[in-house]
Structure formats: structure tokens, C-alpha cells
Image (cartoon, rainbow, N blue to C red):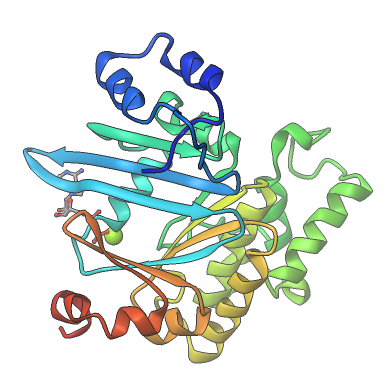
Length: 283
Ligand code: ADP
Ligand code: MG
């Protein structure tokens, strides 16, 4: 087990005001001699368990994602992929376990809003762009409002604000469509716009649910390129079913099954793992 704390002081501070369950968990991971907590960890989930009506949707899940990593999560329906994302974003509270965003942000001690503001952004499977607004206005609305001088649509943007929208437009391949209504975009372009909206919020960790679903081959290839680009400045977790797409991302893959990790590693390793073939790929 990875020690959660860099020093004895950090550990003692973390114990303050905690319930018995968390205290006993922390005590188990008290730093002794060697301190091996990875400084470059973006997301740290350990022993996460959550039940719905007695059924364990997530069962002792451990997941460690490094900064600037692109990680694919695959697994059969009901494996717990969406519930895992719900826990990271604060929508669902686990019954047990530890969840940290970076070294200092305890996900279980913060609300959904606080978690979003701390830099975790999520894109749901179905795009939720404002169809009657232009692409540009959608991005403007999503802009981190703390940074906006006049937080109303239509108020003039300063040059930095304009620039930050143009940078995102370029990344998501929509520069030439910035004045189009979002409703007129293809399904794939709407997905990119929604990823762009996450970028406007300055999210550090991006959780992206099935970005390739319903896309054309060409859009899928562009989406893979976009995700590769994003990992340079963000940490990206992608839930996806399309195995060709997952392979093209050339990232580590985690296979979830019955709420815990069945296998983890490169796509080649995963595809040749008999356990994975049995529960998932062999379907
Ligand atoms: P996946 O996204 O991998 O398909 P989910 O995380 O959606 O899996 O679901 C995992 C399991 O938890 C499923 O058996 C699902 O029916 C159950 N589940 C998820 N959310 C709830 C809920 N709010 N209430 C009851 N059961 C749920
Ligand atoms: Mg799901």
C-alpha cells in the first residue's frame, strides 16, 4: 500500500476531527521509515466500496492515476465505471475507502461543487451543449467565471478572454465553426465542443464518458488525437467501449469487473489476459 502522507505532521493533522473508521484506516497507512507517496499522483482511490441496496456496485476499488496520464477504463455493463466517476465527482459517497485528488484534496471531505471548482471536470456520454447558442458563446458561458470581469453573455470580452476561447476552439477543431449554432454541429463536433467547455473551466482532471460513441471513423480518429493532445496539460480518464479506439489511444487500460480492478496494463497485455477475455472481450 502506498503511504498517503509525506510526513508524520501531515499524518497527525489528517487525523484531527476524523471519524473512527477513517482514523483506523489512516493509522494503517501511517508513515514509518520509507515515504513512498507518489508526488505526481493526480487521483488516488483506495479500497473504495459502495453498495446500493446491499449490492456492491464498487468493491474495494484501488485506482491510481498519475498526472498527465491518459487512462482508459473498460469493462462490461454494470462493472461500476459510471459509479466510479460519480464517486470522483462527489455525486455518490462511498461507504468506505479513501479518495484524493492530488496530494492535498480529500474528495470525500468536499461537495460536488467544491470538487468541480478544485479542477475535476466531467463529460457525460450525451452532449449537453446549448443548441441555440453559437459555438463561441457556449465556450464563453463555460469560462471559469472567477476569471470573468463581466460574467454575462454578450458583455465584451477582454483580449485574454478572447484568446483563451480561440485557443480552445483550435484544440477542439472548431475554429472555422465558431459562429455556427451548436445545434447545427454533427454529433462528433458536439462532443468536442463539450470537451472544450471542460477546458474553459480549467479542469485539471478530465473524466470523459464514451467520447467515441456514435462518431464517424474520421471523428473517432480526430478524437483520439484530441485526447493525446489534452494529456500534455491535463490528466484524462476515458471510459470507452470501442476497442479499436482504445487501442489507438496507446494508453494504459484498466478493466473493471464487478466493482473492482480485474486487470491493468497495456492493451496488448489486457487483450491476452485470459480473465479479461472470459468476462469481457470474449463476449
Ligand atoms: P457501468 O457504468 O460500468 O455500466 P454502473 O456504475 O452504472 O456500471 O453500475 C454498476 C452497478 O451498480 C450496476 O449493477 C447498477 O445497476 C448499479 N447501480 C448504479 N447506480 C445505482 C443506483 N443509484 N441505485 C442502485 N443501483 C445502482
Ligand atoms: Mg456506465
